[in-house]
Image (cartoon, rainbow, N blue to C red; front, side, top):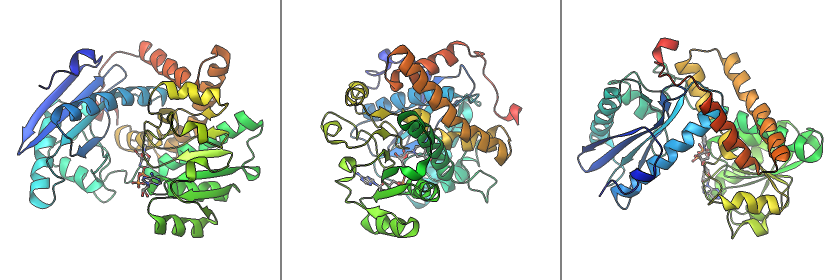
Length: 357
Ligand SMILES: NC(=O)c1ccc[n+]([C@@H]2O[C@H](COP(=O)([O-])OP(=O)(O)OC[C@H]3O[C@@H](n4cnc5c(N)ncnc54)[C@H](O)[C@@H]3O)[C@@H](O)[C@H]2O)c1
């Protein structure tokens, strides 16, 4: 039952465990550049095969993201397919059993937070394995990665604006942010400080109003934000929002945001290019989160060194856009080529994360 997705996958291995109704899949896509790193997603799936498919796809995406970000990390992802989101003692038992699974892989996979998994959960996981990032600051971890993700998106927006308008002066530009949660709210503040005119939207309207008040932005309804006239649209909510149905209605010049998997299908990159809209590949733009964790927790770097890596997101995007123009492909394809080249030139060795600190 659980093998239908595996033959088409080009990754290295999947570790499987079962605990009290929960299937756990640790998908190691690539260790070519270092230990496979990526978050743990906890979710209720219709069946375990869906969970495995999600894990395989997300692990491959982490390989690309980490490679393009210049990190000494491969790509992996773990999925905990729970019958319902647990709390209290059952949650703790599940996390400890999961930690044993991760620990058994001996550092081949390094875990972190993702959907429905928090810093407090990573503190529990750390009781049984050292191969974990994203613990709380109180437990010696790097704390929330969201502010660094926002800083990376900010650098990418500067690059995209310079590419489209010929100068990177944000004071003459406008942006619309879809989703002002952990990442979007910090991004709104950074863009407002840089003098950009802002519109913000969130399905949680009270949150949108609060952020708008704090940064001096306009609020637009959540179902209108994609068709709001602006220079830069920044999706910071959920995936799949750029598709056959939404692309014809867009009224922006560039799309640069934190959300994962913004394109519903590969053809959407071509649809955006045909409309003359610059699409900055999400996995280039939103690498700030993994950079934050890897830099501070795995590589033992200073905050200044982390900030330099975040700034480099802007230069990586510039390189991607230059190649896209030169090679007459979409930025998405150019970024995929950049990842493939880094992987091809990689050391091909497994690095122990702890040995590097
Ligand atoms: N946190 C990180 O470090 C990080 C790193 C990489 C990528 N991402 C991605 O960035 C996105 C935002 O992450 P976050 O940590 O800010 O999440 P979050 O849950 O804190 O914020 C998301 C916000 O989007 C809103 N939202 C959901 N659906 C919406 C819709 N259809 N229209 C408008 N608003 C909507 C939610 O109400 C919430 O306020 C996610 O897709 C996440 O996967 C986050």
